[in-house]
Image (cartoon, rainbow, N blue to C red; front, top):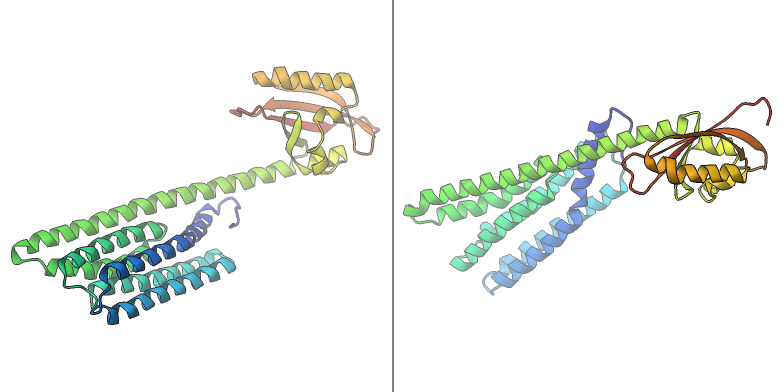
Length: 319
């Protein structure tokens, strides 16, 4: 993941946008295989074979190119400086795929009306699929959509009788507008989600930094066992964090009465949302005892009953 330092959320969102873009590669390659298969099944004929075979080879070559680019991306270190270059690489690879799809409406454009309708429908489906796979990048979508859609729509308009020429242009313009609106909506949604995710990660990183640097020991306790604690608590108790998370908090108290007090507080006072505070004797990992200032409060809006405990050592002048 990208760095999550406060103030860098915009940069982190941009980096995650490129990562999300490449994450669609495997499913888009599968879509290419399905599309090529459909074209072969519906357009294959002895007449079409001399052009259809090279077209299929070219399409699979572009798919292999995008697969190699995806593998290189996964092995690389993504940062803000390289993110733009990777976006251009992805967009150009999408462009080669779009050009190859567009060839179906060029040299391979069939004369049979049924097959022409198939090409038109396939082109529209492909274009809308591209709007999904390139939802995180306007650049990649434009470079894919133009060579994919324009040849087919031109063929559709030019093949209309004169009386239907203007309706054909209107239908074509409407299709392009809808396609652009769909991608715009997907792009805004994807970027909003990525920005929110980056802001959340930055906030969590900041909270974790505070959690680990406060002078008091902190433990988040569920069912009497610490599920998370900071390093300061380990220093106070003289135990590893793993040990603390495997022992009930009450077992670290010296007195059985103190243990009963802590249990009662967790089960009653804290469950009502009221804070708890007491000074109790605790035992370190080496067996030595000390007085601890313990306060706790149920975590707000937590249906699991998690309790946050703050533990500080009271300086009595001796161990």
